[in-house]
Length: 170
Image (cartoon, rainbow, N blue to C red; front, side, top):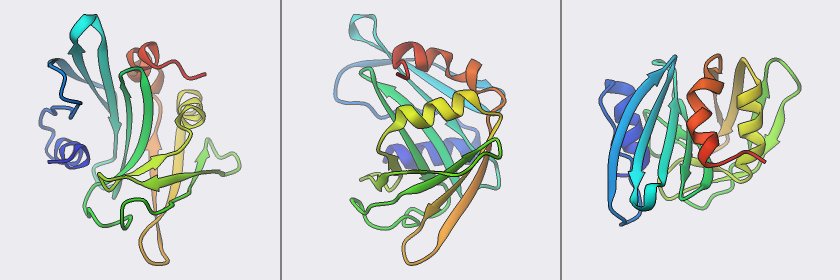
């Protein structure tokens, strides 16, 4: 099962999540809710941690996943109800993000092997998420359409504190 499928299952069912990681031994240390965020922490050898945070509305077609694995930040928009929503892996998929009613910003990205749209420069998006109260996104889908989603970022600073500690947003 891909990471995207696991995240979708967790978001839909409220069940626990095991974050898919490289083949190194991992000990799950916790899954917690912080407001409308779900934060997953996994302990690694040598005292390191991997942290992921997921945000979605129950009715949304798209979720937001932020991960820090091996001190590498990644942010993706996950299709929650339709694996093929964003099309084939490798396809360019620039997203438009609008935080707190300001002008929309275009973010380069592409569809990953897990069928999620991976943001090419995640640090800039993380800055918007940490500084905003709400965010809207418009993401192209396969064909000529797009899907939109809104995210309540009210608890982002407290939910992402551990993640930012592992992957500082420069």
